[in-house]
Length: 396
Image (tube, rainbow, N blue to C red):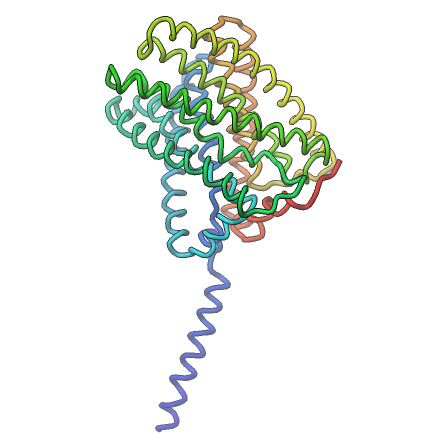
């Protein structure tokens, strides 16, 4: 009897250990491997809604459909935020690995941009559902949080690249823009809040902060885009899995045109007449020049994507969300240029690009949902494959 009593606990412990091991193997890896790159889905969904709110094409049901998409982006933001916080609490080692990873760390700019995008959509579309006071309150919270986190990413990620990462000559890719673009999104979304800021010093401070954020992000983005161009010239196009990140370059280009235009719209409520008119003139001249380069890059990115697709190498991964948000900023940039110049060219381009955006979002969202449901996107290999291909060299 005594022998039985002494053996069973040991056997039980062994069985428990085996059960724990089996559970560990069977445990879904989504939470363990959840990275900041998933917030690109919120950005891509939110821009579909936000762009629809201002696109120069009005037809019955558009605003209602856009509001539904905004609600979806808000729900995704809440879900991913809770999951990401849980991930950082339960798996701190994985969170540190993401922070130290030379590629994954770049996507710490995605969460603040997700906050800012949903916040802007709340003011533009959500006010129809929850009322303007509630929409403003939510937008202020999201804008403040997104701006603080965006400034943190704009400083911390480059600093770690300067001091901790060993960067190869061919390492530059579109993801390098992710940590420095959030302040530009803050400038654009902040411009929407300027008229709702108390008059006087608070409103003046708000618009000046937005202009400063605009400049901070613009110069950092231009430096980074130059490095990406140099990498493409000297080392060829990246591995197939990273080709969609070439589209990220459109993000700071289109968003800077959008931000300049929206700040010009807000300027008369906050600045003296002379400066307001000057900002309007600047927004048009700057916008035209940058819009032209954006169209050049769009053509180049499309050509590289088609080349890769024809080679049968463009398999789906989370980098495909790079086809959405950056393209959406070109829609909003074209829209503000149309509103300031009255040129039908920009209205036509805005509408055409928006149709492409909706199609791209539908494809990427469907593939993502399918990958989540069948588990293929939740495996560690799937979540890190795109990041790993960034370091596999270039192919022409």
